[in-house]
Length: 270
Image (cartoon, rainbow, N blue to C red; front, side, top):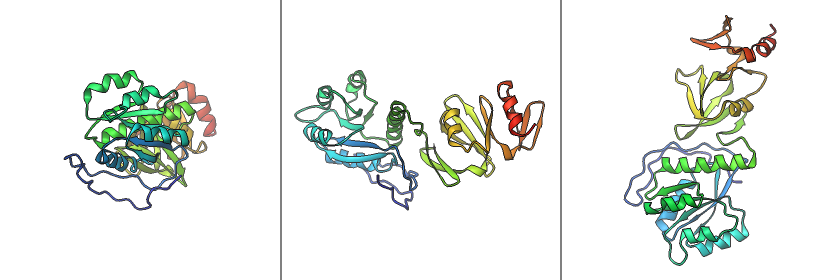
C-alpha cells in the first residue's frame, strides 16, 4: 500500500466546473492498514479529474482505476478487489443505476451526479451517499468517512476515526484534517455522545473528534490512562489532587463514578 507524499502543504486547488475550491489542510504522511480500494466511473474527463484529486487527499483511499463507462468498471471488478465505487448516474449506454442493479455482490457505492432528482432512487439502492456536482470537498470527506466507518464495522475493525499510533503520538480526525496529538500531553478525555474532547496541556482548546470513548480507550496505553466515569478518561500522572470523588487536573474537576471508583483507587495504590 502506498505512502502519501512526505511533504504536503496547503495549496489552492484549481478551478473545476467554474467553482474555485477553498484552501484545505492536507493529511500528513501515514501508513494505514485498512485501505479502501476504489474506482471512479464517469464519462466526463473533468469529473474524473476532480474525483481523483479528492481521492488522493484521503489517506485511507486507494484509487485502482478511472473508468469512462460501466463496461470498463465491470472489467476492473472481475480482476481486482474493490471496496468502493464512485459512480456517475447519467452515462451513455448503461446508466449508473442500471450498472448497480446488475451487480450481484456490489461494493459500497457513492453516487456522483449533476441531477438531484435521482437521489431517492439512489438511496433505494442502498448507496452510501449521493454527491451533487460540483463536489464540495468537505461534503466529499463526509461521504467517504461514512464509507470507511461502515467498512470497519463490517470487518470488525476499530480504526475508522483514529490512525495507528506513531511512536508517542496518535492522529485523530478534527476540522477536516488529521491532527497529531502527543500522548504525554493528554490530560483527560471527555465523552459527548458520538464525539470526544481530548484535553491537552499544550492548548486551552480541546481537540474534538467523532469517536466513542471505547474507541479512544483501546488506543491509549493502559498503564498511563484510566477510565473513571462513563464520560471521562484521565491521564494518571496529570492528577493534582482527589477530594470527595473529584479529581483535580488543572482547572477541571472530574467526577469518579461508583462503578469505576474501586478499580481506580486500586490503580493509584489506595
